[in-house]
Length: 126
Figure: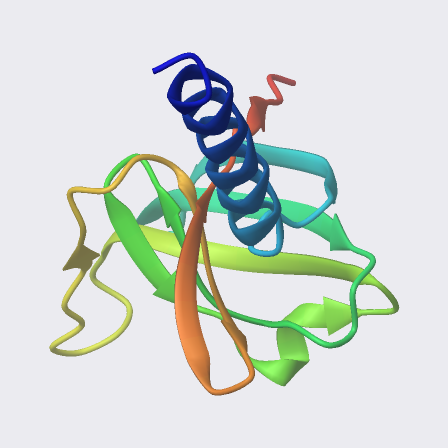
């Protein structure tokens, strides 16, 4: 009976460390994550900006305030991404806003797998 308690503690510790390392592989370092709103020329939305240091992952789309916007190669300038998230427009005929119930964050692709990382974007008011 005495040997089973240390074994149980060791197993719990082992699985905890394993879980920690397996989850941390999906967490990316995202810097300068900001967004600001705009309202001009019959269009409203957000300009989202962030830096990504890991070139092995590809950001696929961004979620801000429940709106999803795909990220293209043109959104990347150096190691910074700047994405125009359109919330409402009359300029683009038949444009449909994509909605998502996820919190603010970014969808990424790595090794042919898609994963979502929540991001706390800082609102810039000017």
